[in-house]
Length: 427
Image 1 (cartoon, rainbow, N blue to C red):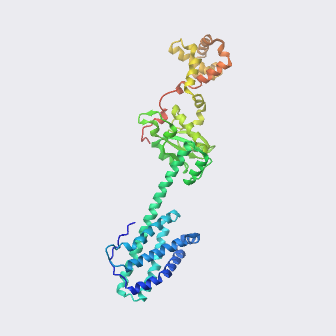
Image 2 (image 1 turned 120 degrees about the vertical axis):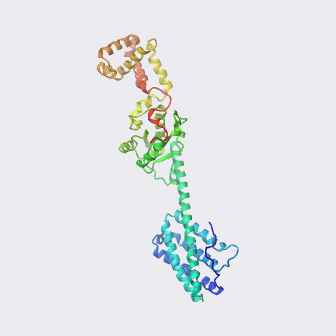
């Protein structure tokens, strides 16, 4: 800390006065500490909790530093006498911040200490023969010295808060990364303790554009964690108009969003183009992250402007677990249609899919396809001619249902779905 000399020049105290003051320093320090403890309630608990020696040491160091200053000649380095006291005040400020006490409490202690110290110091100095003319200069020196110490403590207090805040943020980011990547339970418990993060029952992964994060955090649980590198979970990522998709997306871990609370989270993410994974026990958050990441990679989207709830697209997620196998199965079950023209093949494929999903109910198939029931009858006659008895074989029907269960709009595609193609900076 800066220990530059005080602004006002002073004449060293006569040796007799200095000797008298030095003899009284222990008792002055004791009375100063007693006054601080008596008048600043915050320090009553601190003193009884083992901080008494620290407080006494700080007061004795300050008074000793002042006496060194008051008796020193104005030499080459007039700041030298107060350097230990200034450094001690800085360390005291940092310690008070670590103890959770505010700067207001520390400044109050300085005010009380300055008053009591001045009263006792001046009384001893006058009794030892300090002239009245010199008393004003002596007072000026006392209070300027106290101002220097309080400023140093304030700096230490602010520096500690800034440092501890940054350290805590790093611990939270580390915890989020460990959770998202599936670290062992013991590592997660230790990381949560270091981050001073109260563990919830569950965590839910939410993927959303970086530009939408600030507004979302205002609506979500204050314990929500933000994974610093979403690419660790999302993987290489699809490509968007603004660059790599994972560079534009952020991964949040939202606490206690299971059951009825899930609806509140979905409302909080309304119009934020988000993908919401399932709620999982907090130490299994990686499973929620993987589910949400798969939905993003598959380009699944929700009914805009609502977020995509992955609980609503479980069939698509299951059927798309192996896109290559699904494509092979689809080609296999549609092989009888391969010789048809593209238009005829598309019409019979959509009819076959609707027939499977509606269990052959012609009116419902017609309603879904917006055609006349007779058209459905005609197309099904064509399909029976092409497939024969296979349409009545349970295993074949199962294969067809799986292969065609994903609607054509959900077929494998490149790039993210429209819900996550928002340009960077969109609000």
